[in-house]
Amino acid sequence: MNIIDIVDIIFKAIWWLILARIILSFLPMFMNIDPYNPVVRFINETTEPLMAPFRRLIPPVGGLDLSPIVLFLVLQILHSVVRQVLISLLY
Image (tube, rainbow, N blue to C red):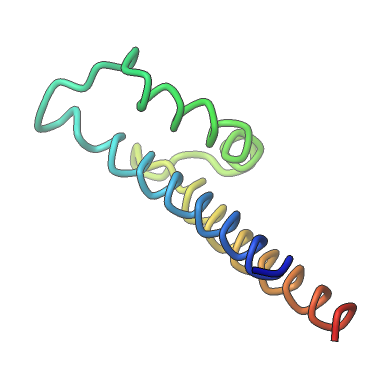
């Protein structure tokens, strides 16, 4: 496992955490979600610092928070840039 693999894993983990946060935000419409559950708290506390800057810049549209979508796009671009820089430095 090299540094590029580690970077890929980190970005993939962040991606899955954001996706889990999106799903958790819709689940209260169908079932009771305990916000104090350790897993829910971990997901919220991990993703909030990433989403908060986008949430401040982008207002909700029709009650829908678009910050995760923008964050997905930014992370995808950032991941590509970091990966290409590492490849150019290592090879």
